[in-house]
Length: 208
Image (cartoon, rainbow, N blue to C red; front, side, top):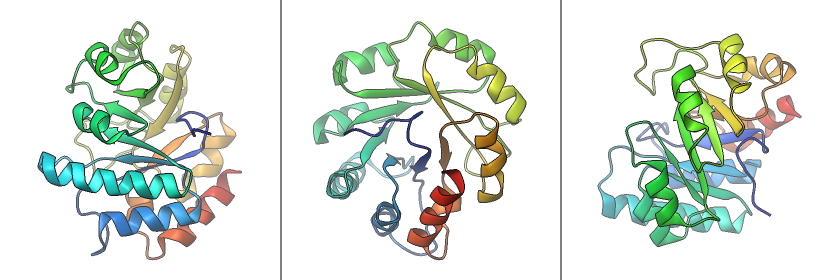
């Protein structure tokens, strides 16, 4: 069984060096033990060879725990290691080209930040979109955040399953899921947690 964005409620997205002194793989392993079934391997800093080696190790961890691994941006590496899919930003490879490289079965996602981007995505060969940032966040450089009302409004414009991320904390979950959001992506709320495994368990309990 593949766990998909928009279906499984919690999506862990990694980032460079946001791990409280631990390795990225150590944190991924702890999150998987806690019950994470969706991981996006993201690192905008690592060179390709180091990225590929670490992403392959992350994939092996995900396979061990029956989880889905989606690679951020680097389509050829995702194809080479056999990842489940790719998540693209607006400035990354064209989704049509990415689909041609990855084939029909790969999961393909795209970040969107406003109504024109959400509408433009409708004609692309995607499986899901992310709509955000939900709240202000230090892990992405955006001039504004959307807020819950706007994310929900934009979600009505897409035919795809969708996720949201950006500054989402445990205290937000009850309200967000109560209002109809199905999948939230988190970075530092998981990666910087003192006890990652326990935090993931608590987050999932707060959602279900």
